[in-house]
Image (cartoon, rainbow, N blue to C red):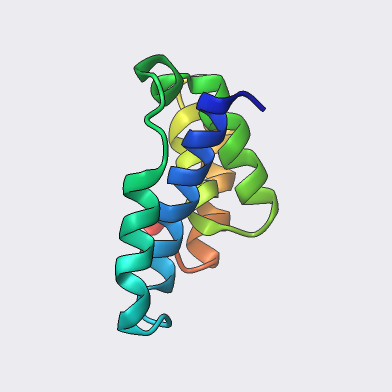
Length: 102
């Protein structure tokens, strides 16, 4: 994994954790998460928008049971494979991702 892709993965994981874990983590950990996000090396803009890397990462997350990963993957592949995108949105909806249910 290249450094830029690793940085994107770290930031992505922090974003998911900050949304999903904020209710379960004590308030004392909030500065730790913020400091980790600020200390992560900035990825080049090209790595941030690379659709194939984002699709691979969201596919891994979705296969691991992450509803947001399924939702994001569906949005990325919808123009090319609408049937699979609908299945991924249904899977994310069943897993509790409310935006996927619309």
